[in-house]
Length: 290
Ligand SMILES: Nc1ncnc2c1ncn2[C@@H]1O[C@H](COP(=O)(O)OP(=O)(O)OP(=O)(O)O)[C@@H](O)[C@H]1O
Image (tube, rainbow, N blue to C red; front, side):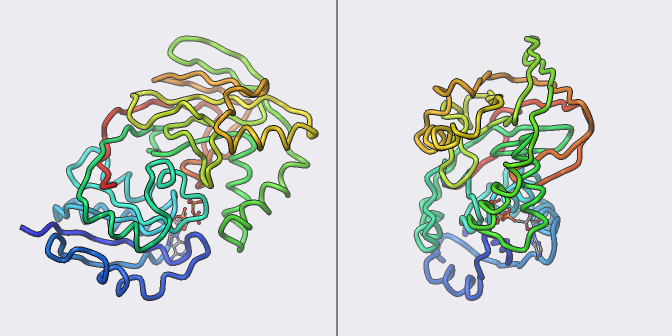
């Protein structure tokens, strides 16, 4: 029996046009294995609706053709079901795909679906919203908020958002309860990592794993601006855990109290959430073809 596969294509992710994607996918997909359908997303939230419908129709694989935001919308619908996620990385950061070793080359990523190999990964939940790569507060949430409201996507747009935010951003106070351990910190940002990387091979939590049943809470302390080159060196050399400004505490249940309600980023997409954040890991919930 052929497997039913649905490609959900985000036409704006990564600033890349996806014109002709269907034709290219058909050329490389093993059509003896798969019965393929293609849908374009029309607005934010649409990928989630299409994936919910695909689960109801017992589709075998739903492929996110986009970045971590598109993956999040689809994976949130597939989480805890038998329908597996596929990924064709066409985003700006592609954090989860890069970590899983899914090729950035479109043809290679499509051909990889033909191997039919599966991995079961953990998911995170923050105030009732699922995440699969990373959630964060503080500086990176402000950056994703700015990035979402900007018209330049891709790595250039992201760099522009970082540079505009970094000169004005002030660290904030947080009270964290990580599996019962209470820590109070002033932090520049806090990332709660399922996978080790944020995207673009920036490793904020080098020891994190999507199959360890844990989330890594990465507290980035206030750092002098002259240390930015060193911080970037650590980030791109998988040594962030060796920086004196980075503290990483793994945990299963995490509560974070902030000074006020503020933005949170969930797999890079900004959401408004209250001052208190309740976070938990759900082990082995999402099947991925990779
Ligand atoms: N047709 C559309 N028009 C406008 N926005 C859309 C459309 N379809 C999906 N979106 C939204 O596009 C946003 C960005 O998608 P995605 O995160 O996949 O790309 P990215 O931000 O460029 O990549 P990454 O998350 O890897 O950095 C998501 O919030 C999604 O809801």
